[in-house]
Length: 279
Image (cartoon, rainbow, N blue to C red; front, side, top):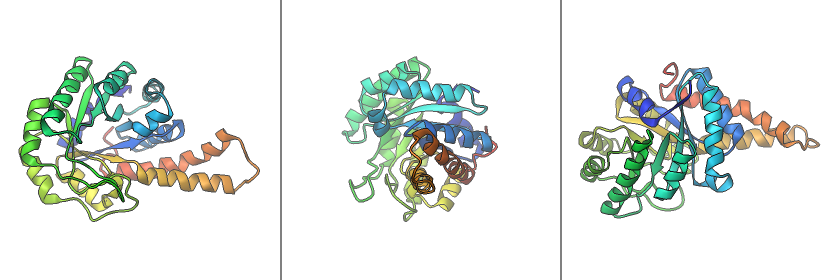
């Protein structure tokens, strides 16, 4: 199966009681491992190219790489721009073949966020591409504080922008190593009552696995972004690969040894969200 849009995979997830992982990619090895994991689990997958990845490698290269992986895959693969900051970011991603873009206006005033997001939604939909927006600030572990999503503002935001999915701040934080205290279930229910679109959790690595499973099965959360826990799996595998043969220096040989551990870690993520067998 070839590339899918975000709407293509989140609609069935919402009606089927599961969530699709948005997996943060930093290079060829992890992206390939995640597609292999998705195929092994017969699950849809969303491949992310975030700001750090795009600073390391041009967005056009990410688009071509994701397309190559998708066209050889037996499951739906979404090519997703994560945390686009400007209309130009999203336009460049669409031109590069991405099937989904996220415009992050969460640091702006509500009216400015709505205007920016609505512009990107119109651009994306005209190209047959999905758009994810964000309302409320998702902070960082040991860094910027979060500001929760207001349900009434969420209703207006979705109505006036036409986004395909809404990233929310409900106790989640980016870059958290290990499970945190869990998400604010009451706030999630109030947001669900206010808006019909699929919800997205950024910083999914910090959400306890049991809560991820419960929310995937019984809420409008249809996408959890997972980065930190898989980067930790990569780091452990890389250290082991280097240590087992200190004389080895070939980059390809060393990095090849990281793919199987990343694949297995990603398979556990799919299973934990109920996505296995849904591809």
